[in-house]
Image (cartoon, rainbow, N blue to C red):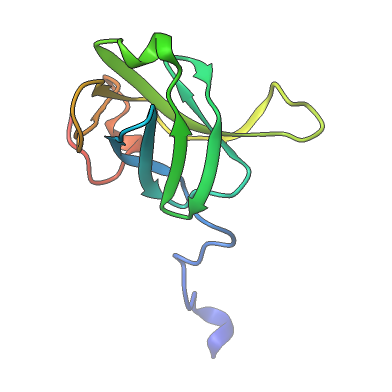
Length: 123
């Protein structure tokens, strides 16, 4: 009988776990954060600071890089979704990803000990 079997144990309601996979620096003070399962309500943080974020798709955000961060040697990037009733409380977040600030196509490295939160990336 079907009642005795789990048909799809991997079923996920909603978008699934967010993950930052790549940060690509672009011209004009912008960068593109690429990954998986990004909601339209997500906010990108660079080095702990919220930056202007434009949702493009479930795989991409376009961000404005503040001048003080453009010259930084390394960016720590993460995505958070904040509670609408409590705007300082995150209800979902990615692991922090460190990338060199210079150059395009920078491959992220997970924060030490956080590799398990970023499937597909090795420490």
